Amino acid sequence: MAEIVSLKQLDLNGVYTYADYLMWKLQERVELIAGKIFKMSPAPALNHQAVSANLSGLFYVFFDGKPCKYYAALVDVILTNKDKKDNEITTVVQPDLIVVCDPEKRKGRACKGAPDLVVEILSLSNSKRDLKIKYKLYEENGVREYWIVNPRDKYIQQFVLEGKHFYLKDTYYKDDGDIASVVFEGLSLPLEKVFNI
Image (cartoon, rainbow, N blue to C red; front, side):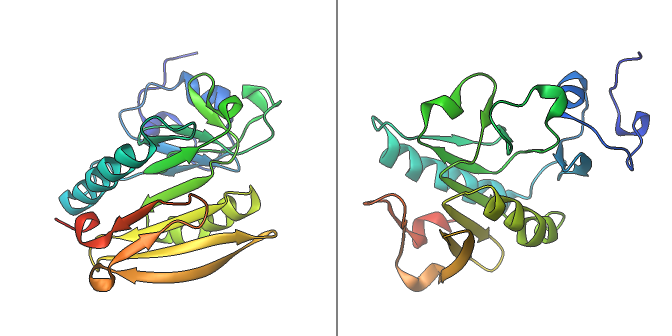
């Protein structure tokens, strides 16, 4: 089999697994959702990068020395039963930031199972996927808290899992002070610093 280095070599209507994904040597970034390939932004805009860096710095300060760990992109998150083999896994995503408390999920090259907190920073090319497809995916797989960050309009939507469904706790704008996590007591981020771009 020829080495896969370009999306042009793949059938974009095909169904793929994590085992396939691991073999690819693509220049483009992709995610697999239910076996389907979704292209990611080649290089996020500067405001996306600035917000990501700001959040990473704030998360580092809070989580340093704590049992829960945070990771910034590029981290594969496998949303499936932990016992499945790579050739049975059909969903792998790369959120902008995740926090994972269960050390069993943090073994190896990917997070296997739902992170406790997921942060997605919107780009023009990924808004629909993050607002609809990944929202449902995270909800179904038990992500406890999900933040959707809009760097252009400077706000964060905070969704919290209650039972089996997310509810919108609030939408926080740059001038609203702080956003406080529901899942992580004491994690309160100044929105002025998050959106200092």
